[in-house]
Amino acid sequence: MGLSRPGLWLKRLWVFLQVAMHVAVGKVFLILFPERVKQQVLAMNQKNPHFSYDNWLPTFYGMQYFWFVLKVRWQRLEDRTEPGGLAPNCPVVQLSGQRCNIWDFMQDGWAFKNNVNIRTHRNLQDRLQAARLLLDRTPRCPVVVDTMENESNWRYAALPERLYVLREGRILYKGKSGPWNYHPEEVRAVLEKLHS
Image 1: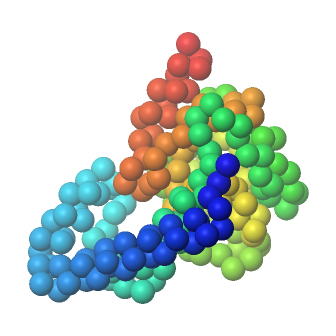
Image 2 (image 1 turned 60 degrees about the vertical axis):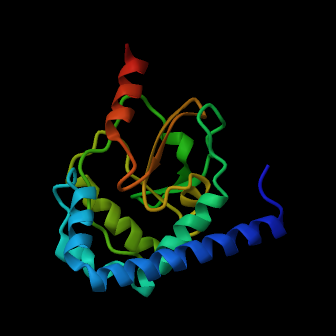
């Protein structure tokens, strides 16, 4: 159903305070115990071969980090997707520029491999250009992008990343949000089960 407006704003205020405390404490720990923080961050990212501590450290616990984490946490307050529930049929854009809906691309047996580092885009052309980088990796699935209104991102609570398996307009699998809490092996298991 969703939260009432006052209920949503109270929850947003609570999340704001939590994130502010997280960032403040993190910043203090980073200053007082830099080696311990480095060990913790590296331990969280052992599975990601593309992770570079030197690239990430300057971004932790600053204002951009604060606003990004706040945006993600606020988005999760409005997450309405559930396994077995109806999958939102959000508008997306093909690389040709043609507008369509996400359900148009449901098919069996596709999966993403590896990851691509893409900068934030300011318009649809930037977004389409960034998506073309995926084509160099020869994905085994159609590549589409969200519209600049980000409806798919919001309706699927996909920020910063989340894995789903959709079939016949239904959500068969909803993974936890990434990059640290999602598990591609779970997606593979769901897809293998569908094909067995």
